Length: 296
Figure 1 (cartoon, helix red, strand yellow):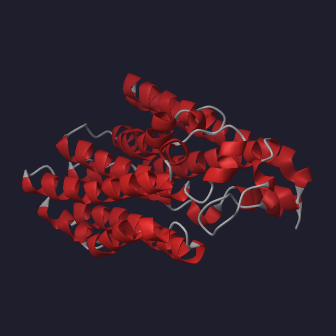
Figure 2 (figure 1 turned 90 degrees about the vertical axis):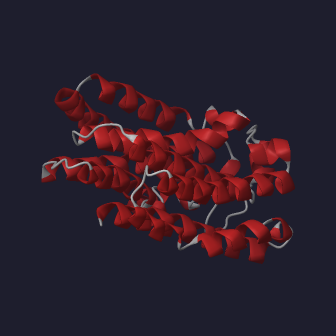
């Protein structure tokens, strides 16, 4: 494997769909409000979200490699990193440069929207950059912050940032959509930390799977996942979200299945991997259907 291929793998391209979906929620919310953003602004929002996700993945891969975590972790299709740097150690510098370059592009896009929209973009943009830079080295050592930071980044920061960048306003629908995304993404990161817990503990990380134990973390993951659908239903009931967004409840049976089976799968790696895969599909489907519901 070449160093270039290793850098691409380290960005974890298979998982980069999450950022455009979250930014896409901001775009859909802006259109729902009647805003008509320029095509170039919409594309920059989506590209910026994609690059921000790639940057945090690249930094995570680099930090995991230099800390030695990559050498002791058990990889699954949904956790443990790409494994690119243990295969091509000479690509570590290129991965760090790629992370710096993608983050620089994110900052450049942010500065454009700061010039266009003013101070609110500075607050949200700065929060996003801080999350990207501090997640692997510092945030993963604080259990509660580690739980909330990814959800905040992909939820309120990305969705509200996209909304404001496109000239729309903060409203109840935006708050509800951001909160739903926060719960879903927090649950995703929590459940994906389960297979990594033993290796993470050895390099000094202290996320909730380590501090609470796997059974309690599995219960919390189930509560977050089902809570996101409860919040969605409640937002529709009180009129914060349009009735068409009820189509995003379609994955609920699969979410219930994941939540009820997770604790029993903790000692069965094959079954746990199946649940991790279904969980990813549930999250992505829910966000995509929410975008569709907002667009109808």
